Length: 191
Image (cartoon, rainbow, N blue to C red):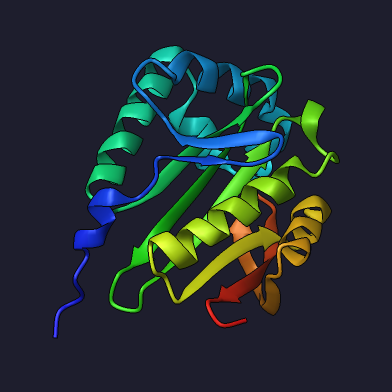
């Protein structure tokens, strides 16, 4: 029996938290995304190099936004901007991708502007996204992969109920060419 995805046509495109709103990118959000990525290059270059690559200019960022919209509509990935409710500014990004609808399961990756780190905003965003994935997308499992030395991400994963599942040795190469280990965290629907 094939997996019926018809309910995906009605999923929320905005998730409202106490201090943030996760919402699907819209056309012309590319400029804000480019500025966010530019201002956080020091972090992104080691942990999210493809995000840096695909948002290296304002035009590239706008293309990234539009590809993200198309991928959302095709149920291939779900990319959210993280918007601060007080400033209405873009302060981060979160993406659910590598989706396998046969299970169904997906991977999540994220970052928040360095000026907003340590305030619990990423924990709030990941909590909203995990609920979205497990409830609205009806996934059985959400997982994330992070560098073993990315202590902020490790902390956020644990706060959101993700459990450490293992370490992948020499799993990722930084921009400088250094091989690093990745830690895998999982969040099953019935945890």
